[in-house]
Image (cartoon, rainbow, N blue to C red; front, side):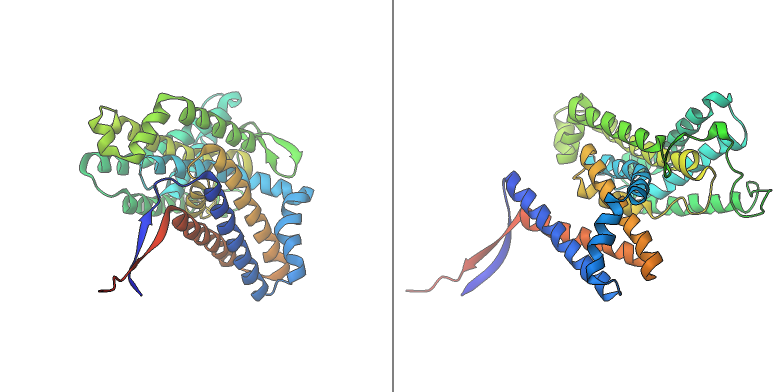
Length: 356
């Protein structure tokens, strides 16, 4: 007879256990997702072809996956770097919107020499994203106000401002549709002639590599790990806690802004209402799957991009909705969360003592 059941945190989780639980959680998530797709009308014998072969082994599907991975890498890095210092950035889309606005403004108003304009667009996007996360950062550092609601609400403000621009001053005069005028050829990043794959994926991978060096080989990375583990203890030992939080959070906003800038300069070539693309949720999922590691973010972003590619194909051939793709993401995330929980904690059963 058991008197109580309790959870005990494991002092040390072996690497083999972590990998096994992660693989187990991922397998369960994929299995449940496949079951959901089967109930939604996708034939069982087509699941492997739709979820893997057409996504990663066909030329067109792989090109679409690589193209979609670029912004996902950046928003995943954005979420991961904020999470490292316990700053919950729920406003990734807002920072992305402002990055897209800033990049489009450089092109629309012809700011700077044409040869430098793509660089100026991306720099402006980074600055705009960092500025948009600055207010919730200041309120959290100065007054300990929760950043969760603030960043979320600021996303709505950013999106409404985009609507204001696209239905007003920036409406395309050539078509009358609520999109900005198309960027000039000098303001468009080059493509490689393989689908829509271009410099955006090169920039995203280079940023991931630089950030891995920053977080793994620099003093700032050591500070970030200490602050993430226990900010109070880190402050008591004399570490620059506020400076570390400020730098990583501003970097998080800049990365989201860069994702918006790349969408304008490398993919869409204009500002539209659909650039946001639910990137907040995707960024959080990718950051979690990668355990905030920059190189892990790259792998997770490619997997999520592949999921989106498969979702596009499923929508066309089996009339599935966008909600199904989001639901699959949620199922896989919840499976991985459950696996992580049982890797971190063990169930302890206390037996009732029997009187002699």
